[in-house]
Length: 383
Image (cartoon, rainbow, N blue to C red; front, side):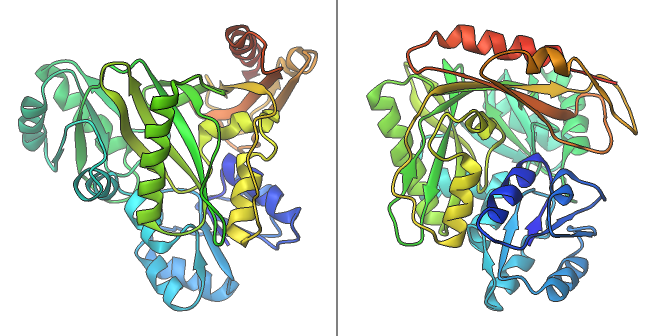
């Protein structure tokens, strides 16, 4: 039973069906991408605990796989008590769906290096927190995805807009924000980490990414790192995933600074959007195959880097109830390139509607590959 049926869920469903699984995809609207390939689908409000448990009772799943944040996650503890496997675990989902919980675990309990932070439940509290943290600072909702509600605040005059942005971009009914110190990092990475039921924790090669407003725009793999920084990131990822328990793939995000070292940022207990670059065949197994195997308890002996890759998103610049796409032929005429249109039934301004992935040999010029991918993605226009 898949809770959330976006583009990441769609690839996960395909991976599961290739392993003979029967998948029921759930979301708050009909026709979501994963529903288009699942065996069954359900439409309901996953923030309504009664509706969620009713759907669980109807489906009677062996495994529940959350794919989004907008879930009444505390109900998943009840599911585990009923003998249903929750991925990676009910504890992991509850902690990571809320930035406050995961930050307290990482910083306070595990001692991982993070940016300085405070919380606020009102605009007045936000002003006090920002004054304590200093400017510039980052303001985020405690629950959101894809950078929704996040903003960089350069001075006190921008705090009111940041509060409104955070409240408007929050998922669920929680009206609380986290105020973070702005880290002048050199680059940021996603370290895909795989925890297994009976095998060792495995790490993919680091994925570099570019974000705008907290939302991913392009990613590339492998991202070159010093051995020292790579080891720091792996050590922190292993520590936090072990504390959260469970099996599956985790997208662990870090800032990397030559002066400050590796700084823990966030964590997702599922395939990560920046990991769509693995659809370019950069690894022997994509992040979706890795997640599927780990969830099912199938062995993963190793993760190997096969070639380098880049991804760039296709964003809608229009509102459309029946989106169409121009420029696909330009992308498909390029060598070593895949085009993925997600199949979202409605387009909104700024909504991610597809992705282009490109690949090349490991010794090829990575910047040229990234430039090619971004250029091709820009040719696809949503109408």
